[in-house]
Structures are given as structure tokens and as C-alpha cells.
Amino acid sequence: MKSSHEASSQSKDQENDSNFDFSGTNKTDIKCVIASDAPKKLDFLILVIETLQINATESLLLKAKNIGLSEDFSNRVHFWKLRTSNPFRKSYAFTSLSSEQIDSLVELIASMAENLYPLIRQLLSSKESKTLNKERWLLFNSRLKSLISERMNVQRSYISSLLSDESNEFFRELLVILSLSCGPGGATRLKASMYHQI
Amino acid sequence: MINLSYRFDQNSSSLELAGMPDVSNGDSEETIGIISSWTLKIIGSPLLEGEKEHLDNLMQVILQYSRSYISGIRKTFISSKNIVKISPFGINHKLLLNSTKEGVKPLEIILDDSELSDLTRCLDHLRFDPRFNIKWNIKLDLPFTKRYIMNNINNRNRNLNIIYSLIVFLFTSSLLLFIPIDNQFKLRETNNNSPSLSEQVK
Image (cartoon, rainbow over the protein chains, first blue to last red):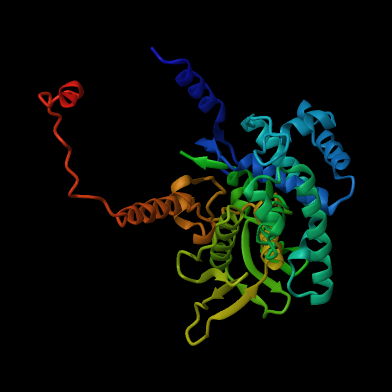
């Protein structure tokens, strides 16, 4: 007989298991599980979107409505509850995201990144004026760091290291992810990075 | 014969393809089924052109590299016939193109992150464009295994907590070895027939 813990962990595994469906020319089902850092990554990507666009939450909800996403995106509270699955948040809810929720968030992030592509591109480009680029990064950094310190648990060493990091390596990584999530194949690419094949 | 030409522009990259419908495959008048030529312009680099096979190779390498890069993996990718190679180059990316013609030196193009994403978007537009009925020889964007990620992720990004804890454990254990202990210490045997206090007083 299985213990209750074993049973619950098994049901959780089943919930996290997903058949990866990609929009390629041939359809294949691949057994995979949600990557452990997926909630963190998705929440930080939304945070970058909020940094790049003022009142981004409203735009995100409107975009979700336009692309026909589920009830999780019907209002701010439901949307915030999704984001509390990030273990680095002050309001971490000890919940995990289902594969449907991950797919919806990926779709939403990819379509928002498409709108913000010119801004993302400006920040990543090394061919533009250095002083202008430096100013842009300064503004982007200060806004993103203030959002992080407002919403994340600053007691966590990871968050405090992010706030004190001057190289902005992680922020750049997030912008690269957003830039590669744009376009017709971007959502599939981002989705693939949120899972692990088994 | 209908000659068609379509162009995909994306900031720093511009990809233009010319071809014709493959009537034997039932293509409509606006669909390209056979590619006759293609040109790729990347700002600041020479014009690239070639055959379908070369474009296939370029797509293989760029799309695989972008797929890996989005997962935090930066590694070199070489196309099946060694025509195209892309590898990390500092914070940028080095694209190396070998010509199939003899005596032509390989062409090296340095792309930054924005140019890489422009090029990736161009190629994405091409592979998902319904006006093309062409089977591309490219790998699909699939999730990686945990092992693959662990083996390929940058060393500095790896979680080294276990190794650090092991080092601290070994260091403290070795420090404990230097604490002197009394090897001469012997337990005194308890003697039951020793005289009691009252007997000693007597």
C-alpha cells in the first residue's frame, strides 16, 4: 500500500507531466515535465515587461482577453495568484503552475514581447550610441530593481545578489529570452525552454 | 513559367527568396515550391547568397543556437556539411560561413544579441510562411533533458552548493585532526575492596 505522501507526490508528478505539442510541420508527442525554475522565469519575464511598459498589467490582461486565454487572466487577482508560484516572491503561495497555465503565460509573454520588440532590441544592440545605450540601461536597471525590491523577498540571498549585481547579467538574459520569444516560432521556443524532456 | 519573389525584413536582416511553384506538387500560383535563389543582407556584412542547401544549413544552425540560447546554453553548432558554424564570441556570436567553391575564404560575421534575434525572426517568418511549400531540414524546438542542460550550461551558472559544502566539510574535518588528544589517558579501574571512609578513620 502506498503512503499518503507517495500518493500525493505521484499525483503531483502526473499533474506536472505534459505531452509537448509543438507547432511544427509534423506533430509529435513527447513526454516532458515542467522545469523547476519555470514559475520563477515566467514571473521575472513579466516583471521585465512591466519595466518596459507602464501600466503593463492592464495591457497584459487586455492581450490575454484578445488572444482568448483562460479565466486565470480575467482579473488582476487571478493573474497575481498565478505569479505567486514564484518562490522568490514575498507572497509565495507554495503552489505550482499546471502545464495549461504555463502554456497560457508563454503565449501571453510572447505576444507582449512582440509589441515591445523595438525597445528590447534597442537595449540589446551594441551598434547604437554607447552613451545613449548606457542611459537606457541605467533607466531600465533602476526601474527593474525597484520592482524586484518591491515584490520579491529581499531576505533571499538570490534576490539580494540580483539587486547588488552591477553586471546585469541576469537582466540581459531575460531580455534575450524575450527577444527570442518574438515572431512566429518564438512562443514554441520559449515553451520548449519551460519543460524538461524525460 | 511564374517567377515569384518574397522578402522578409527584420531591422538588421533582410532575406529575399526567389522561386517558382512546384506544379507537380499541386502548388498554387502564389506558392514557392522550388527555390531558385536566395539572398541575405545583414547590416554591416557582405551580401550572402546560395542554393537551397546552404539556406537549409543556415537555418539548422541559427535556429538550434537560438533554441539553446533561450535555455541559457551557449555552445557551438555546426551544420551537417560544415558549411555554417555559429559559436559564442564574448557576449556576441560568431557566424562562420564556408563557401562550397574552392579557393574562397570563409566569411566571418559577428552578430550581437539584437542581430541574432533579427536573423532568427527572419528565418522563423520563412519557415512558418504558408506561401512556401518547402520541406526544411531543421530540428524542431523541443525541450532538452535535464542532463543535457547540466552538461552544457555555463560553469558559472551551475549550482555548486554541493561542491562548496563538501569542501567546507573536508576543511573543518581536517582542522579537527590537529586538535591534540591525550593518548596516555587510561581509565582507572574501580576497586571494590578499597577501604571505606569509616575504616580509614579508624
